[in-house]
Amino acid sequence: MTDSTPPQTLRTPGLVDAHIHPDKTSWGRPWQSRRPAATLAELIENDRATQAAYDTSVEERAFGLFSQALANGTFGMRAHVDVSSELGIGNVEGVRAAAERLAGDLTVQIVAFPQFGLLSNPGTLEAMAASLQSGADLVGGIDPAGLEGDLHGHLDAIFGLADRAGRELDIHLHDGGEEGLAQTREIARRTIAGGRQGGVTIGHAFALCDPTLASLGETLDLVAEAGLWIAVCALGPDPVPNLDRFEAHGVRAVAGSDGVRDAWSPFGTGSMVDRAHLLAYRTGAMTDEELERAFRIASISGGEMMGLASVAEWNERSDTRLEFAAENLAQLVVDRPAPLRVIRDGRVLR
Image (cartoon, rainbow, N blue to C red; front, side, top):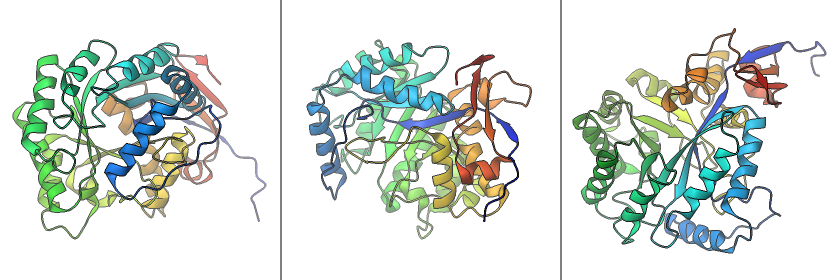
């Protein structure tokens, strides 16, 4: 049975996608079948081949995804965009061009992301430096030990580039186990040593999701001390954190879509309400407070990470808001409707 009582109109802050790859998406294109892949290296090679085969531009595909996200209430995005010796800075320029078409409505921060390796792919560091002059905002990194095999060399390179350019960092870290925790602690130590508290994000951080690891507690304490943001995407079989334990240690989480309809995943809708629902489901949310936390992670926390005051400091009187047919945030996360209205700075966008 369903409740026939008409739902109330609920006002909420805007949403933030804290980890997304808009240059990879097939949004707006015909359906593409995916090849199976068992390892990170195989997934990366599938991605490389898929990107090379697209017959539409990065700008066109990214703009389609950005428009879909905006219509679903996303006001901020942290976009990880591939930069390499092969690709150069073309993907960054395409994503920046797409973002400029929605300037004033959607705030996009671009991370120069060395998907295909950094030390292992000579010329990529130089391309990343060039991308920071052509539309990228942050310096990215990826699995310094697991993919690159040189923890300190990789971190020396990306922290050094960030220092020279005066930029923040956002690092993919898929490596699990104690090795993943050791890398997390080294990132945290470098963050503290450089006075970068609050300016470094780790995406995925699967090792932080494993309660069996002996050094998890001390690692979470160091993550909190360093003010690291942890971007959680809650995809498929990927590990998810114990959010109660994160909160107990003072660790701050944000939520992202990761890949949307690309070589990595056939899933994704461009809706961060959907992502809040998935995060709540994957983390076993039951109470209203737990459901509301999932929304907050996909909204206010992301606004704090990105420095979006209109989201992070939102209140009921704000002229930047979303309106939903829902009685409360808990129901909103469960039902995951599209917003009735999307309003930014008093302008109705939907």
